[in-house]
Image: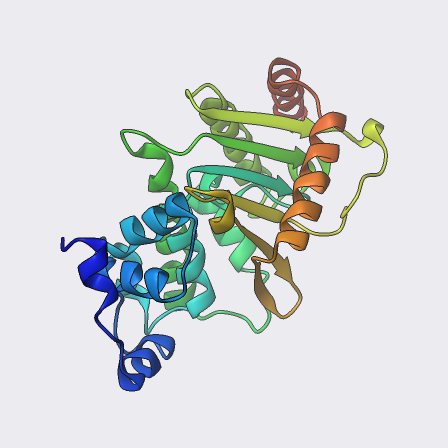
Length: 257
């Protein structure tokens, strides 16, 4: 790579900027550094993190679904791929990357409008592949806060729910994965009606919050939102059972099915 002082003298034409903003062309690591220098960005760690992300050129696995699934789902997979850590709060169902295929089918069967069988199976396949982020040699440390409601909702039927809870217990034993249950007895908590996925970036400026809304998926990046959702997750965590008690709770719920 050329020295930074040499990169600064290069200019970026309007066509390049327009093509980049419209996603018609990618961004190279060198171009990130050129733009950072042009804008006098003083945060070297932030620039390095952006440059590292830009260095991953070429197609990724989620690009195979670009014409078959909503772009927001691909964005979730990309966000998880780049995350340094994951924090998830789920109210009505299990976290996506911890779901079993039959449980997924039960969730997608409730979609409005109804999915045709082929589309439903594409969604299941995509979500299964998302879960591979936890199978990497160095997966992102992940904490999953799961409300008791999700343990009781029988998406796909009782057999599918039982297998899902067994799978949750298996995943909770893996290094780097922490599962905490928020029981009904914990009472109310902030943001109780919305599931949240907080992806920690390589640097705090690249943190992203993804929330499910009635119209689809929303991503939030502004520091005010990030601070609020960190507080929400911290409060929910404070009301959750510890990991050992959570495993006992899930085990009991499994036995009751």
